[in-house]
Image 1 (cartoon, rainbow, N blue to C red):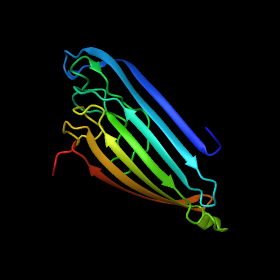
Image 2: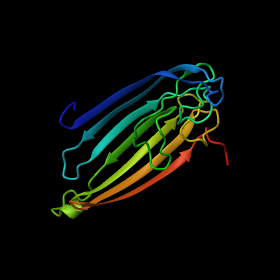
Image 3: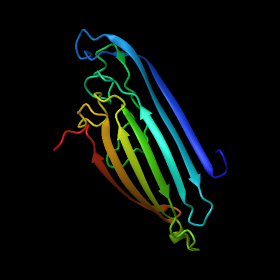
Image 4: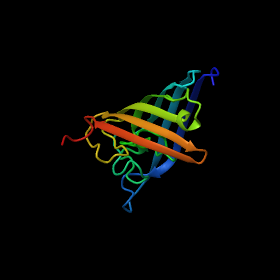
Length: 193
């Protein structure tokens, strides 16, 4: 926490070692270098009012590889040039409800806010309703590289954008309702329909 109301987070991950080349399914598969990275940086500001508004911004990125073949989400289908740069994530991040990408060959900008519209109410049932809109912008790290979405096959860095809405309602101490909605708008990295 920078101040009592401004929080920040940062995380940088490096993956190094050896993996198999794109010929891993044949007897001639060679071990190649693996050097990948990911980052997650964010800020969240809390306003001290009864409706508890917050605003936040986050940047997350996972490295990609231009000449990797096959799936971006498996260790098979590595680089054809001998240096695999695909970040293979081993955890999950909330990067949108509709696209829901993994942190592989992607740069994500996330902007959002939340508010308790009935936070002024003396009834906990009403005061615990939270409304949270979030906007995402997605770009490939390497334009011709694969992402976690096998449909994004075009050599363009423009993956698209998404708008999400969450409404969370705590009805009692052990019962919570969540409504989640997301709309993804694909970019030039997707073939036109």
